[in-house]
Length: 399
Image 1 (cartoon, rainbow, N blue to C red):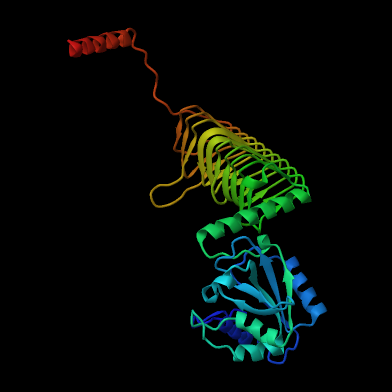
Image 2 (image 1 turned 90 degrees about the vertical axis):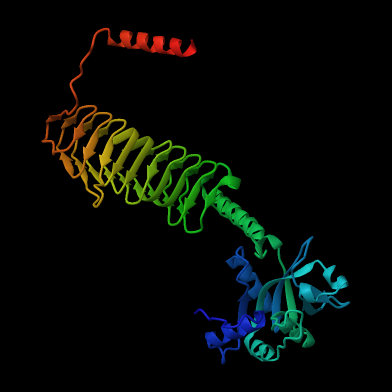
């Protein structure tokens, strides 16, 4: 359930709103409170907090950390016996209090009855004129019922600016890459591997340096994702080899497929098993059949391509007429010669052959040869006369 804090008047008020929305007026167990700007908090940390609450039976349990530069964080104040007496926010702290390096991490477990009563007593007599949740700790201290749990700052650092956000993102990337490596994935360089939290990578997959995996991408065991590949919502099957700088979105890459280098798969591209697209090939909303290949320098948009089709360099599916996107269909066994243009909608039948340099404007029957190019004419001696004229013109300019 999401609760909206209509007026931004402090963390104490935010918890009041949350407690009200949770409808826990009769609940007498512990309520866990976490800040929204600590993205590295993980389930093990919360479990440890609850374990400390269970063993201490304190009214309030909080996480603390000791860091070199505590600027901006609330300081943990203790008496001579080491008992917590209060948390002092940075803006309200004295010089002596600011010298304290033990900070409040913003993760708490409160006994629900105590929390309800303590929130009702909060006041705004502080530097920011807000209701501080940290003042609840002071109330628990007066009851001598505060327990603390020390934790590594790496898991609980907050985000207050873009620099801290980048630091947390780096830590999260390294955490994910380390978990993948320990699960059996080869992660060549964890520091330059970018894997988002919803991505799934199976054991025995290989991730080379500077790979970016985003969204709901799935990498099956046995696949190799080479340097610089960027994938978003892409399914990659076993044995696939994505060569450097393959970029793909919302696509499917089948078993033993090869892509790249420098290939681009736009949404709804499907490469069936053992097919191949090479360098500088772009696909969009196209299915490439089993064993088919487009090895270099082609655009395949809105296409249905059968099995064992060969598409030569420089082939273009001319799919857009200015209003509609039209489909090009190549049936099984078709051969498309280099530098051919297919003007959609058009169909090329099984085993048909399109000669190099042809512009296909009509359907091609199965087994036929389509050829559409100007007749070559050689003019003997013409080039020699042309170069002589150019040489004379250059000489005249210099003179």
